[in-house]
Length: 180
Image (tube, rainbow, N blue to C red; front, side, top):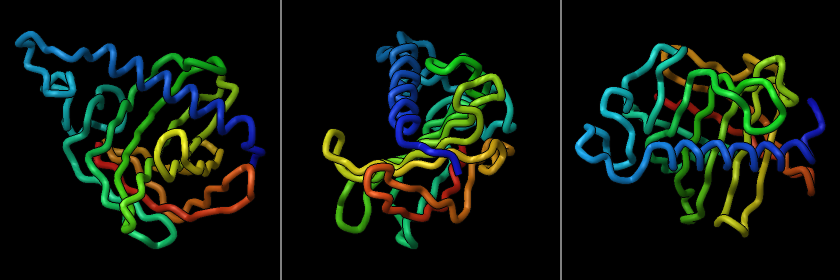
C-alpha cells in the first residue's frame, strides 16, 4: 500500500474542486430544460449506465455502505463514470462516485471513490471516508491498484477495503455498492 499522508489530503481537495465544478456546471435553475432539482438532465439521471461513458448524475439506483460492519443510512450516490481531465496531478479521472449518510449515532459519513488513469500522479483507485461534520471530521484513505474497485454496468463496488487515518494510523473496513 502506498503512503497516503499527503496524497490523501490532495485527493480530497482535488475531489472537492471536481464536484464543485460539476455542481456549478449543472446550475440551479433548469429554465425548463428537463433537468431535475439538482440540475442533472433527465436523460442522464439514473440511467443505469453501461460502466463507461455517459453515466452522469445523481444516480437513480440504490446504495449501500458498511463501515466496520455497521450499515450506514445513505442517500442516492453522485457519479460521473466517463473520463475527464484531472484538476490536479495531470492525466484523467476515469470514474468518480460519492455517497453520504449517517451512522447509528447520527454522525455524518461520506465515501468518495476516484479512479485516476496511468498518466496521473495518483494513478489507481483512491478511496476516502470522512466521518463527522465538515471541518471537524476524521478522514480515512486508501490508494489502491487500478481495478481494485469494480466499476461495471453503472455500479461501483468494493468489498472489505481497509482505509487508514494517516495521522493516527487507525483503520476501518468498508464495503459499498453504488448503483449509479
